[in-house]
Image (cartoon, rainbow, N blue to C red; front, side, top):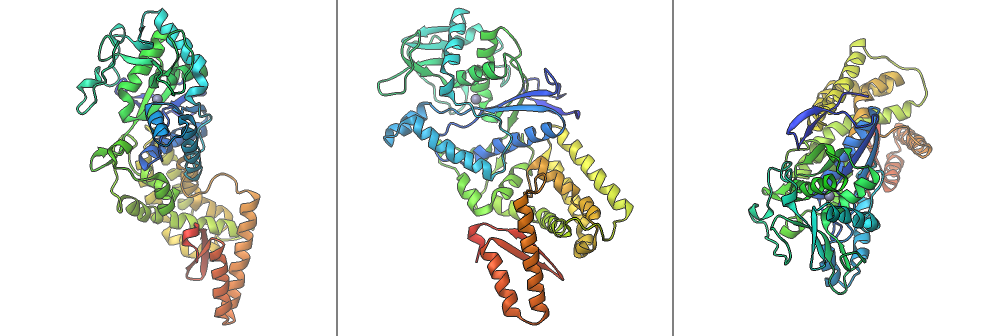
Length: 484
Ligand SMILES: [Zn+2]
């Protein structure tokens, strides 16, 4: 297992990552409240922790990654009421769309998406423990956490009372002893989804679902908790207060990782502020690789200001400078097949490739610095430029040398669409395209340009776009909107 450093928000320092029971790593990330279409702000957290989980797994850790789904809350009930839809069904619909977007974005590392309402028994047990231990009190059919009983509340965020946050709405709830107390169990109103409880019919508060889920699935203490920077307070403070008081064990989490928000003109991208750019639109217009690249070409803790019509366009241009060479080398690898013939590279290039891969791992192991890793990939891309015109003359091992840093980025960062071993369909496609490229070259050779164009157009209709580079022809797959 590689040595990994992680910046921990709670201790405010970068520390060596030591799991409780190596090589196992318990990872929990606050997931979506799927009450509306997801936007590009939501997907940043998902992509960042996909990289964290991928990297840890490839370095020998065994990661169990949970991302919860808040499939019931005030906004879902409100939105459901406005559209005459069962809020739980509404959540299912939006979560289904989210999973599709995650598949497109190549986010594959989440092991399980626990849904809040599947953990009502665990939630009731935890609320009961907090009442029994004197950390919570019932009032008017609801149950509140008595924040005054938990002195460490506020340690993570440096903040205690929500009302002090500029612009925060002060929730006036009858029965609350102190404004900083938060709800664990909410008495339900008529028509809302409801469960029986010792305090009367109701539904869970937002914070309690996370700790009911993690105590059940990760145990009272676990390794790594992630989420957006905006969740530090009150959400993550509440999680610590709930779990540590209910189980009597501390700390709940050994490393807290918080991701900088996607903003527009400096303000958090959020549905309620009306400044959102839809995830599906971003995927449709720019493609998943460019979106992943956009998120990862910045430090995960930095805020990312999104400018419509600019940010993803610029990311696309920069991405192409890496992806172009990566594609051409990958195509050369495919057409070389198992032929062992071809030229070798100077020893210095092979050594430089190994050094580059080593450096990439080191950069990522330093608090998942994807930004520096991508900067290193640009250096590599500049150095391979001189080999690109003669790729077809290189041996498979020489091509593998040129490809190694890109392959690293494919596996660790999920870029370039190259992942692991090609499957049989990929191989069949590669052979068919190679045969078509040969037929096209032959047609050109005998001056039959109409036939050559016909082959290019037919491939284009199937989503295979040819790229001519001198005497070499590469190809890549394009989406329906880019087909002739
Ligand atoms: Zn959460």
